[in-house]
Length: 533
Image (cartoon, rainbow, N blue to C red; front, top):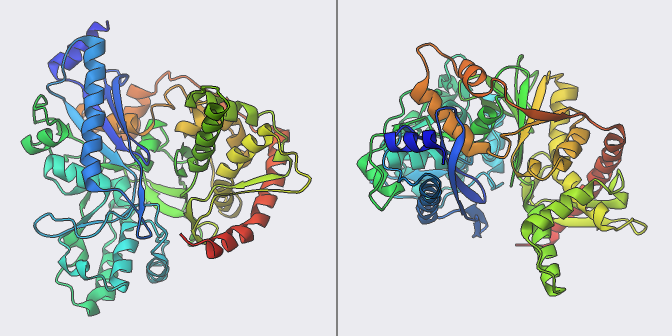
């Protein structure tokens, strides 16, 4: 038994990071050395209801309670003690989306997640008005689209937030978000890290004819930087998180962040020239900029690190969902054939076989679109596997096409940064499920992006660990210590990892594959138009 871990838990010095991912809610408890000492999770899934991707708020609380309880059980099993008190708690979640509430705290519309591509007219009008790319996922795009749709609930809005902001509000009573999360709500002003006042005034003028009795700053959560005072866990919040009554209130709470921000922190990618790839249900690459982009690109989000540095974000709505779907199908095939195959074995087979496939997948092309993709101008998706009549349709080629198909759209967006904008990338670190099965994901990602890809030993910890690090920074930082200094000196000094350089044959194969992928996109568009949900 780790006696130091036991002492930390008994003394109430532990720090917890909780992240709401697309398919799992995860909680991690870290010690004084920032090492995970206990963890828990809860599986959940988004729902497509009336054409809108959503999660029910009841599921939010059922899920966080289960993930937290699972973490507590893990800690008690390992160290023989119950978690009664914590030094800090941080909440992270999928960025963007739309959660409006009235003055009594009643939810006014379904939670509209990042996955929805239903705000095209609003995003286009705001991008033009602001001379700044406003993606369809952003909270402000959802608000303006609801206005354009003349939805009656808009007049009743008292508070508009994101999933991370909502959970933090309920646990602490504070209506705040971190800088990174705020940068996906509304454009920030770079030198202040707060909502751009000129664009706020612009938006208020745009919606003035509708006669609402609110103004934008009055309904949005306050933006505060990493390390700032974001309140403490209240008695009501403690009861929400731990209905057993074991957890005491009073834990310091960090500014709530989006999964993009926690990914940057978990990979120590918050200085200019560094970047990370967060690869899960969706995928996004975050590159910290050392110069402004030359023009507006609708394929590129302009966001920020948790401590306010400008970031170019390439975000794709679809990544591992199709791999997961094929894995489930293959598991079912195994059972039908009388072989009990675990999901870990199925994933291992897919990722390992991908390295044995033809460099260009042998004429097998996979489009992994469960939902729309802005980068390829599609509002909806239809997962599709296409093969040439003379394709070499082997398991290895199909497996490789699943992985190449997952990274194809990311490649299209990254080319804008590296080729058009000449953005410098010193290091690119990967984290998330795509990088957990051997080196296949890392190797094929390096080939696709033509950039060395590094993975740290902590890559599997991902977002909840990154949120725990942000919370540790809020609790433990010294006066004047920056987030970059804290991560570099206290967390990642001497950290281990591996780097994979692009392989020439893999790179050439992917270049042939991406041309076939582009050629198939008109068929994807036709499938969307012809097959209605």
